[in-house]
Image (tube, rainbow, N blue to C red; front, side, top):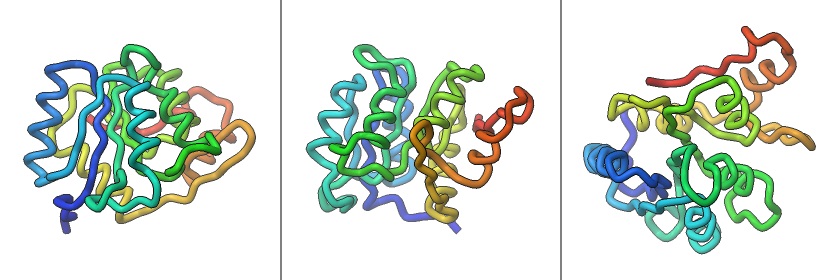
Length: 174
């Protein structure tokens, strides 16, 4: 059964004009009425500081962050590290979905280690982002926090324990 995203507030960090247009269409197609675009990581962190007190969705907080990895100013993983690890972050466990053309092993591992909920590879089908968000809602994962890792338990924890390249792959959506 589908989720009602009409009261969800999304922060979309994307610097590419074309991708911003695609994400605008995706938001409208899922009836998301509350969303805001920022063009870079620094701007995303500032908005998060302002908006993410108690997570209230359409009442003022941010329910979900959808972020590109490659943005000007701050590399896309840096806002995620700040969200998950900073004692000043007001929403350490907010849902974060990262989107990128760059899906090499290092990028995926960095996103996983930073605590991303889902990773979507470009190009993607318009509905895949909300399928991923719905999966987070319907199957919330516990987070593990160690000095070197804050992220999902379960599959991600097993990945952390393995040293082989074959078993360190994480699923990505297209």
